[in-house]
Amino acid sequence: MDVEKINFKHFIIITLLTSIWINISEVFRYFVLVMPRVKSFFDDKQGVADMDFGIFTIWGVWDTLLTSILVFVFWLYSKSFGNSNRSAFISGTIVWFAVFVIFWVATANMGLSEWKILWIVLPLSWLEMVVGAWIASRLYKKYKKGYI
Image 1 (spheres, helix red, strand yellow):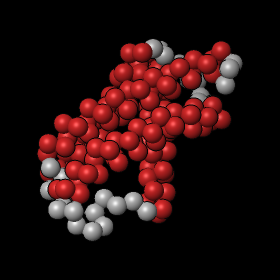
Image 2: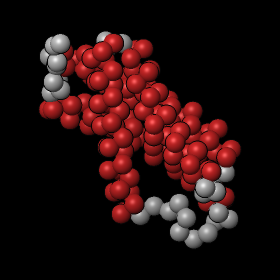
Image 3: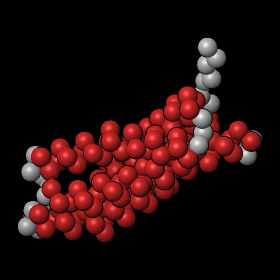
Image 4: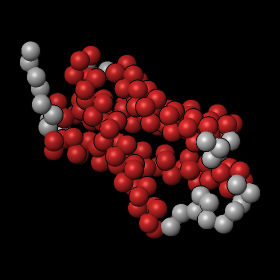
């Protein structure tokens, strides 16, 4: 079996470039759609869903970790099934299920958010992951052609 090893330099570059989209999507979804609903759910209690530099830094680390997992899962999937839009769709959906569906269902199940917020966050986070995987797909194709 021919095993192709991941090029760590290209993986880092592709992760950082893809993380631009992931960060923009996460920040938009949180500040425009999630934060107001979470604050309302907790009757605008002070300190709930607030952002400060420390939390924003942790969020940046979270987004980078999320992106690296997405890029790696896409790379693994594309090694077996080829680099295609279908591979981006499936690998993005796999990461979405493993991260966002579990997180939001658990959050609502523990009473830390209302269930109806899932109708907003789950479709948007799925779109975020599929678009992120598609970006990684395009960047890996450029890597193969020698542009990255």
